[in-house]
Image (cartoon, rainbow, N blue to C red; front, side):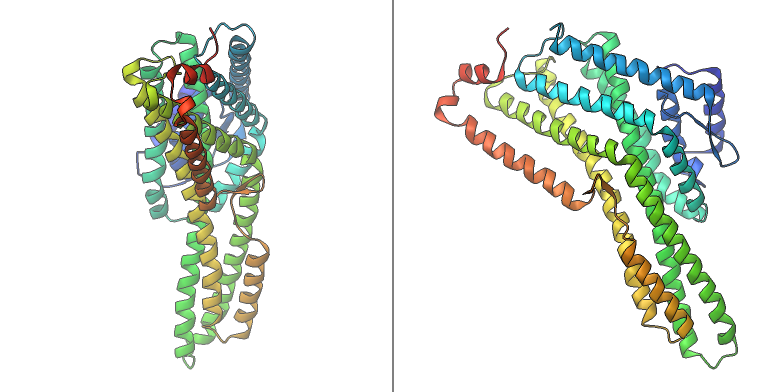
Length: 413
């Protein structure tokens, strides 16, 4: 699962030669860290040949084996917890939390494998769309994408090793694999959103430049160059309209392919933050510990875990929200250009562009659930409401006794 064949090693070495940290020049070099980690995890059954994604049979076999082993591991752990009772937890909340995590994680792993083909076509489409971006755009994007992909993976590996020292080595590697798989798929989604956002920004910048040229044409309409400029502006406007339509179709494809995985990620994030805050309150209330971890590391582990999940969902929401904002700005810029021009042909094309934007709204969603700032505030609001009710519940006189709390939260061993 964690090993790599000679073919993978040569491919990774070849990719390393093409990119440097924070110095991406194209889509492949921008996504290189994410692709390398996905290859190591066995969830990247493709090869890139002359900027074309192709299915690789050896990597597909490795991917199949990795997912099968992963799924068998999920079933084994699930049976150990719920049927055979080999793995014991200290309380009912911990059992519920672990069951939810393993069920949703296995769901993400299976969906990742099943949608390998559509995901390859999506990456190919985004690569073609982003080929028009200037190197400066890739350079700016690489500062964020390379940093979060590499540092996030290092954080997960080091955290899994440090906080899982009391767990069997096999289960420790299994948990590390699961966390990395979920993280890399979430980051792959976020990377695609960031690239599409850069493409939308490029369209908006070109429209702004076009508006300046049109204003200049209107001021100097007696200049002989005016008659020559207008046809070129019309051609460029039509090209921008086609680019917008392509990006709109790609966003719809992105929403369909990543919907199930993203919805599972949102549920996992909400569940893990809620349960870990609950564990933190119990520990703060009377020192109750529900996780098999050293007492001195318990509060640190809960704090780091809550922070990790919150930062990850906040980054995803930020990327989707700013991407939606760029789409809205395009609509505003089109109307500004429309108010700045008197050429009838260009006006008609702008009206068509405006109608296209209105009918092909660009938004990032998961199974109809919009991924934007409203989602983040809803999650925070629901968690806050739950914690207020829980704290009121725990401060009631009949529940202030430690023995009563233990009877509520723990299974009789």
